[in-house]
Length: 192
Image (cartoon, rainbow, N blue to C red):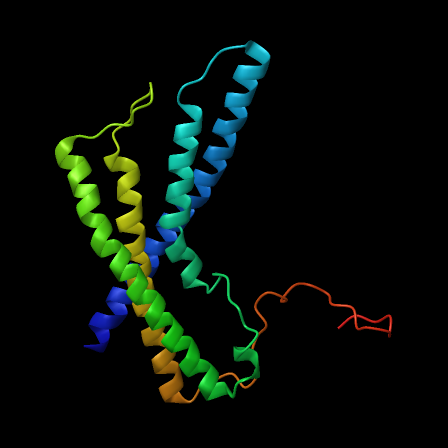
């Protein structure tokens, strides 16, 4: 059973890395498409019909599908005002509870988004723009991304529980948002 769990974790992490790399490329592509649209419209005077819609779909991919990659490295936004003051075990338990709640939210969104995607496939829905791409493509990003994030949370929660059982809990909390920022100490002229 442990081998199966480690194989599934390896698959989920691998899929998150691949889709995260594609999400990074999607961000670059969206920026290039918007730039091209501005250049064509302002310098050449041509009207464009596909640039904004394509960039929105690329950004949808980056946000929804790229979220699992952010979870692999715990790079989602965290509000650590309370948890940095908790004892190590309580802090880890709190992180697990919050992760379970996040996991359930991802599951609910995916549960309702998969039928929406399938309906767009069956009805062959297209965008109402002049470009008119099929809507099943951007609609796919939501359920796929939330399903992958759900699985990534499962891997994360299992790893947190395993770490707690071994007693490998960090004594000091890491401050997430101030990790790379020098904070001046009031009145001393020094930085922390």
